Image (cartoon, rainbow, N blue to C red):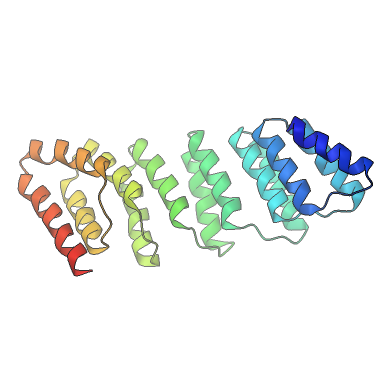
Length: 229
């Protein structure tokens, strides 16, 4: 960022002005280096130059502020964004949800998720579902995680293998075999390829509870599904 700042200084000395894209690149870089004061300098300079903030500008700030736990300011930035006539995107909501989950604030994350679905009408993507499901499973809130898996199915959002793995780990802790079998069947139907984590969890769990055949059927069923596809 020091080198980037030097280039900016040379550009200004040569009579050039930065545009929106260049400002956003610099703000993102300063945020990644935890230099919020420098990022604010860029924001102030943008205002003075008459360069209006766009979604990238706001989303960059919201993401950084959320990750550092400064949720009050992050929400204030989001309100300012809306006042400016900009509509929050799935990335905006995803940044807040992810940060709340990282800080162990699952209830707040779920509230934003529900607001996102009802008020804003922005459909959550598979990344947001995974973040919530993974966090819920780690908190042993398996029933709620399962309800989100069902919601994904209804809305046509396909989970990937990492989402299934998070569910299998959570289900193993509670020994919810029937639910695990349902998800195994869903993986086969969707031809979602199990990875080494999937097989590690299932091979440690199912044979130990006398369900070796279910594991074999899962592997064989998947092979048939893939060959058919």
